Image (cartoon, rainbow, N blue to C red; front, side):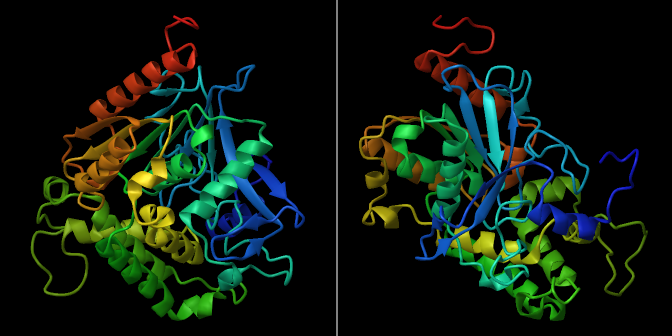
Length: 402
């Protein structure tokens, strides 16, 4: 129903509604077609929420899967129904953009364990009639990719022209290339790694403990009890957000500037602009994200270790691959530093894969992949154009086969 005939639902109610009946497209799988998880659990029935952009060509060879990061969603290039904000990667995806929806059929799904329509802890458990909460089995990056593969099957697509994503999305890209090499023509992992480091696991644990220490978390049953651990989730978001920026970008944007005052208050209000900024980030986040989903998705990242799936040798994950890779990192990214991308490139070289690597000079930290960084756009556009030629697809501005 349009906003002209009915006022929008309050954010908290709307967020909960989106977990079960999202505004996006939805693929449902019955109990007879469960999802086999790394934990050994079988999840069914289950569902996956997704958006598509552009048109699928006649031979279904122009599909691009975009994988979102930790707190992203399926609304990569369209308005988020909860926040009303534009898609999270509209700089990259759309007509005339590097991932050009005039030429490619773009798919983006909400990850397994998420909170905007794909089965997650806020989804109703058919066995109880209440939200899963912590009864949902713990999921992994490989489980997320398994779910996406089932969606791609559901859409009748055999091979993806490209899989692209940054951060946790980049982890999914690498997992796709390792799990389904014959289905991925090209892969673009950005600001990512083949494993989560102990430092990153530590940051996630701080966030999870903040959520679970909130008295309103109620052992994960806050939805049934009519409350939400907003303070704990806000602190988790604040701590994580610091890791997405660089020291230089924080200094340039905030320095030690005071917030709406000329002098220190000698108290614990937000004296500094950076304090006010982080508090704002935390409180706006709680209106669009589920606290239990934060626990599940961060845990999935922590468990990710691609080499461990292949006998402890990362190169084994790519043995015999025909996938074309473009690996990208950013100079100021200390959360997923260039050394982690180089480790992936080294493994790809050892597997004799077709790989290019670019380290992009940016002072904006890990979040660079979401921002206006022209060299990133040029690199991806160039890679996709060259890959389209190799695939026999008409790249933007070119005729098929030229």
